[in-house]
Image (cartoon, rainbow, N blue to C red; front, side):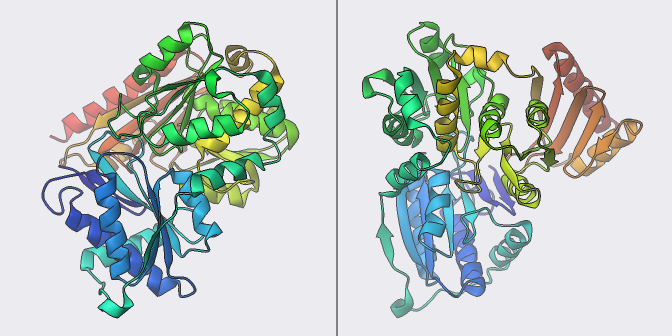
Length: 466
């Protein structure tokens, strides 16, 4: 079984032994620790907003979290089936002390997680996360007596509020989208995007009869691997190949990642979701952009062309957001399809990404495949190595860094090595027991070969230490 405790929350496989998997005991302990931290650091408001994706364990985990928060004296507003960005918007709107999103994002059906927000509706900092982990580990919390228990209320209006907020954004052009008369296929992997995305499209002027819903019933029975990668999207790609639709839209279970499929069934490229949306924003508002070290160089190229400056952060939404604030970036995100648009809020939001991309495509006046060809063409090879308890990741990274010491190296997050026009980035995942190895080049073959060379080096280091 797997239980991953990190500064960003707790994530694990549901079922098993306490401390080794995401059991009810672990959920309650961690929720109580978070609630205790809130009460110690925020005295102005006792409200916490929670919401969840549609995965099968969601209802159980949500009830446990709500009860634990009430038990430490906090009031709970439960948005029910929702999205990560919806909860992020609801926290400041309700002037809440914080929020918890119950989702394991792109992880398979047996996983779930508690993702923690501060009073701004943004992910907590590393320092805050470390304190919550300490409270949980030491069980440094007390539950209140019965007359001081927190209250519980449900509010299912926030998806509609979220969509109305998106319609108010200055660069969302509903008239252009409606005039384009788009025909769109949506794959929401049977989670909450099946509710939110069609609702958004209709609000943007896409006619109901022009929306084909694939895997949009929020049962939590994921129809395919929930990570929106091309190899998992055969069904929607086949629908697009039939030639009756202009675009395919794919979201992950909690709707913070956006992948697009062109009208001919070819992937637009998850890396290029942010590139295209940033290009649209930069055409109307020149400025700076940010993505993480594992994201495509195409965003840098588009930004520089528009007269702005590009900055690269460590992997992780909180790191991207911090750098965006530091450099006053007008848009940023991650190469996994995560779009962060500060005019809306500082969080990855697939719904905002959809609205901005459709505005861009409508005004571009040509197909999605033609739009994709207008951008610099890079290929990223995404690979991983499963970790076992005996593997010392720090030693591996040190040895690789030494081996390539003559190349430009960035160590703010794992090890990123530059090779002229290519790069490779290796780092330990924050959400899974793996080492991620990403490489990029102007050709797929070179990117794959570079990744395979580094993987071979890593396996050699592991073998040497046995």
